[in-house]
Every structure is written in structure tokens, then in C-alpha cells.
Length: 251
Image 1: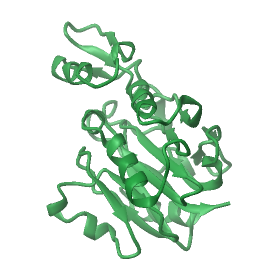
Image 2 (image 1 turned 45 degrees about the horizontal axis):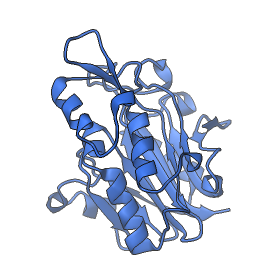
Image 3 (image 1 turned 90 degrees about the vertical axis):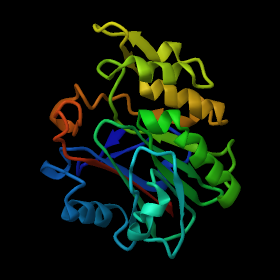
Image 4 (image 1 turned 180 degrees about the vertical axis):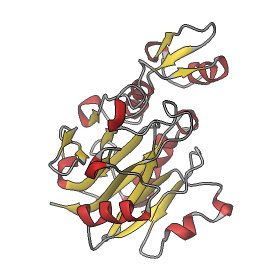
């Protein structure tokens, strides 16, 4: 990822993701960013797409995906009947998709030819629940995206150096329809493991037809990365939140 002069990060490598307005706002953007503050979310919108309408996820670590249209609002997505919304897809101009994180990966998607974009919050629960596959399915089935055109980026998240999981979660990852062996390393505690969640996501994207050459991984650990990042684990549940935003404003 590339850090610009106002402290926001953007993806540079995947073909065509550079043509869509998007950003990841770390904790130290603008001298201190927290997505829980309304004024920080507004500043982020104004810096990326000032005329866009910001639509937020209602995250519960689910694999539920919402199609955002001209009528969709953040309030409508928070309706408890949805059971949580952890990913958004749209091809509607003038909409800025927004999700938050403080260790969990945010995954960005774009297909220039279909004018379609998406943003998914994919912590370990969402990953084993296949929020990535569900997001891609909505892009393809409802917005005309094609797997061979989609590009993706994975924002900074808890890394395989620090992200320890217990035996029940280890079992869930071993049951995935990919070989997760390389993503799991022994930790200091018996029956626990260090999880490289980015590695798992790359393999799941490949399984969905998004080749490694069309995926950029930030490769920055939010747990040991210091004050640049909010980290739920490092702060023992008292962390702020970082933001990811993307809109179909093609250049």
C-alpha cells in the first residue's frame, strides 16, 4: 500500500484498483483517527468523495452481504432483521462504502468494466463463514462483475506473527476448503496457533478465481505495528477503529 501526504493508505499494485477512489485510514491519519467519531468519518468522506453519500456496514462478524442502491441507508442496514451486515457491494454512483476494523482484515474489491465495487470486513468468523465468497457472488450475480476481472486488496490486519487462536478456531480453519497448513504456526501455548489470516484470504480469493497477481496484501500487522494502528487485542478491547472506504468514482 502507498501512504499519501494526508496519512491515508491506498492500494497500488492490482490492475485497475488504482482507478477507483478508495482509502484505508489508520489510527495516526490526520494526527489521530477513530472511525467511532462522526467528525472523523465525515472528514474521511470529504477527503475521498465529498459529494458521495456514505453508507456503513453494521458489523457483527457475519458473512451477510448487502447490495447498496440509491435508496440504501446506514440506518436501513442496521435493521436487526438483517442479523448484521459485514460486506457491501454497489454499482451505484455517488455512494461511498464504509467499514471499520481494529485487527480484522478489510477486503476491497473492484471491477472497472462493471463499475462495481465492494468492501468486506473479514475477521476469523467472517472468513470461516465465507464472507469473501458471498461478496464475490453478489458482485458477479447481481452487478455483472466477472471473476477474471476482479481485483482485490487486503488492508493492514492482525498478522501471523501475533494473532493467536485457540484449538476450536484452529479446527475451523483446518476444515476450510483450502489447505490452511501454511497459515497456522505453533504458538507458545499448547493446542494454540498463530494464524496468518491474510494468507487464508489470499487462498480463498484464488479459489474464487481472483489470481494472486490481482490481489495486493498490505502485510502490516496491527498488533505489533504500534500507534499507527488501532488494535483490539493490543488494547485489550479498548481500541478505536480504523476505516476503509471505496466508491465507484473511476478515473
